[in-house]
Amino acid sequence: MKKTLTISATALAAVIALAGCSTPGSSGGSSSTPGMDHSTMGSSAAPAAADHNGSDTMFAQGMIPHHAQAVEMSDIILKKQGIEARITALATKIKAAQAPEIDKMTGWLEDWNEPTQAPGGHSMTGMMSGEDLTKLDTAQSNDAAKLFLSQMIEHHEGAVEMANAQVRSGKNAEAVQLGKDITASQTDEIKEMKELLAGL
Image 1 (cartoon, rainbow, N blue to C red):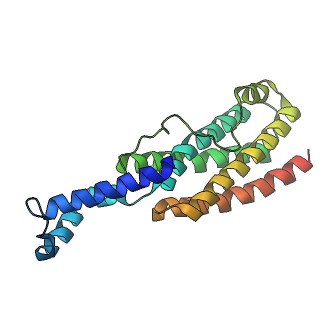
Image 2: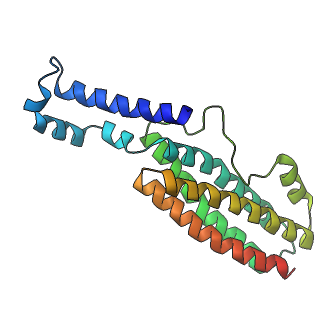
């Protein structure tokens, strides 16, 4: 219900803003100034801000901390000694992909005039608890490698679930494309991590 109300309010605000631009003093003048609507739309930030829905907002607000945790997990494993080169290469790859995506999604939310953090928070699948991260931090060598892979597989599976939901329900073309990209890249990485884990 809350998401639906948010979308409706955004749409209503956009309609009111357009009506206000084209017909400041009359409710019947909009048909006589269609050109003004289009020129105003081109110069106004409102259409760009409105070019998203509640799903786009929730996707970005949820995926930013989700990505941030993946970067944190990668940092933890990269600081350890005796980790197999293929695993450190994977952790480096995850950091290189997800850190710029955090910046991209933060920029979208700012452009959309949406908070970068979800009001009140919402649950995200695949997130590790503080206890999980402590276990990863204290584990060593092969045990650390196994724990990193098993945790990151679960983490990626949660991200893919969130990304698939965005592809189904999102409106903003860039955000939907990012959802598709995350699904493709992280599905491949899940397969790679399962193979690495089986070999340890």
